Amino acid sequence: MNTLFRENIEKMQGYTPGFQPKDPSAIKLNTNENPYPPSPKVFEAIARLDGQALRKYPPVLWDGFRQIAAKVHSVEPEMVVCGNGADELLSILVRCCCDKDRLLAYPVPTYSLYPILARIQDCPVIELPWGGDYRLPPELGKTKAALTFLCNPNAPTGTFVPVEEVKKLAGEISGVLAIDEAYVDFAEDNCLRLVREFENVVVLRSMSKGYSLAGLRFGYAIAGRRIAQAMIKVKDSYNVNAVTQAAATAALEDQAYFLANVRKIIAQRTQLITGLRELGFKAGPSQTNFILAQIDRPKAEEIYQKLVERAIFVRYFGYKALEDKLRISVGAPQENEALLSALQDIIKKEH
Ligand SMILES: *Cc1c(COP(=O)(O)O)cnc(C)c1O
Image 1 (cartoon, rainbow, N blue to C red):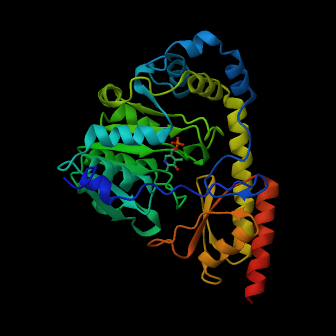
Image 2 (image 1 turned 120 degrees about the vertical axis):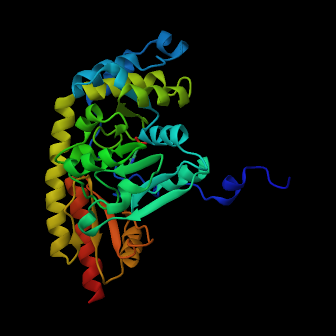
């Protein structure tokens, strides 16, 4: 044997995260973080933890969080499965469902983590391009995949597939349909009600975006018992630490704070789309906390570079169907204004 690792691991590339600048004064609009701090209740909950909470293992089935989530979402506590970020839940689902003969399907472009998880698991993928206006690919319900990921609203397009259409898809699919709702806090609707209707549907939520807790690492799934129990078999024994469980519970409980922040971001999103359009971008609509903005000249990559020179970071992907686009997170008002004035400067110099 001349390799240390499985062949698929030897051959694959890891996930490429958005750049994390060290300069604290940099304007960071590249990873869809929330510009506002988390709820003050989060800090109170962390301060209340005592030595016992850290000395002992954390609740293995996230009891406190499950109670609050059940109340907030009108589900049973047993339908909630928590993870070290929604990313862990995606990984758990791939490990639950997929292998060499059990495929993963998803529309593209979408979240760039999905193919990485498939490669780690060594399962083939079926990537279907979105239909016109980012409608569901007509073949998505016919793939016979063991697992189908639907990022809704989708990243990096910011588009949303109406729940009625997702419902049709859920009825066609015989495998598991995992709806990644990482951005749903900023959308006009959500697919949670499908979980009650279909035992093969699981909805994933993240606290990284809407709840300003990307650094904490917490996400949760809501599904019927069959999927929830499979996910619990596969998860790490104590997959969410005690500090995170306490903080996430406090954040979810403070719905008033959360909703006020979401409202501010949605209002900023409207303004940023208007500003981008005035500069000649095709931008939005968006049902997320970011905007996909397209421009022919100057080239998107060139704009990206010139923004970096000004310590403003947005996301440039550069791959198929995204070469002429930038993904811009909605920041605080001053950040969005700084971005727009830098863009104006860059575009003016071009002419
Ligand atoms: C941010 C994100 C997630 C998960 O985020 P966590 O930080 O792991 O909770 C999942 N899917 C998409 C599309 C995301 O953008």
